[in-house]
Length: 202
Image 1 (cartoon, rainbow, N blue to C red):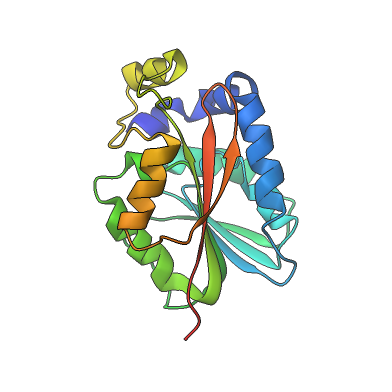
Image 2 (spheres, helix red, strand yellow):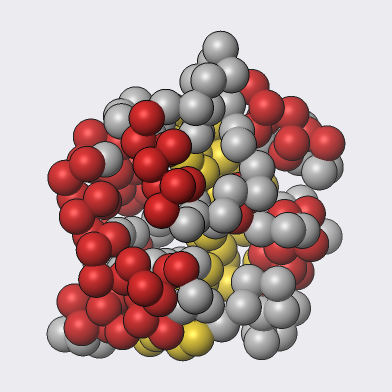
C-alpha cells in the first residue's frame, strides 16, 4: 500500500514542504474542539492533528487504514492518556450510531472511490448537533491547474480520486447534502480548505 510505504517520510511533507498550510490547519482545528468533546479522527496519518485534538478534548479515538501511519502516530502521542489508536476503514466504521460529539477526517476525501458513502458513515457516528470537520487539500488552483508539489505526490503513487479547487470542493459538499457548511481556507504550498458540517439536532 502506498501510504504504508511512505509513512516514514510523510512528516517531511507535513512539517517542511507544506508547513505553512498545515500550521494554519492545526491552529484552525484547535479552535473547533471543545473540552467536553468525545472525538473520532479518521485517516489520522502520522498524527498531524491527533495531538492538537487530544490536548483539547475529553477523549479521542484516532484511526487510519494504514498500519504504518498509525504506528508512527501512536509513538508520538503515547504519553497522552485520553487518546487511543485503532486501525479502521472510514467506509465501514466499527462504532455505534451517534457515538461522537465531533468527527474529523482530514485530507482523505479526495482519495476515496466513494466519498459520499464516507460522509454518510461520518454522519452516522456523529451525535445530533455535533460537528463533522473535513480539511481537504486543494490539489488544483482556481484556474484548474495542478501545482508542482501535487503533481510530484501523484507521480510518487498517491491515487487522487478527486482533484479539488475551493469552488469544486464546496460544490461537492453542497451536492452531497451540506449546502450550509462553513469553510476556512489555509494557504500554503498545497492549500487546504476546512469544511465544518453541522449535523442537525433530532
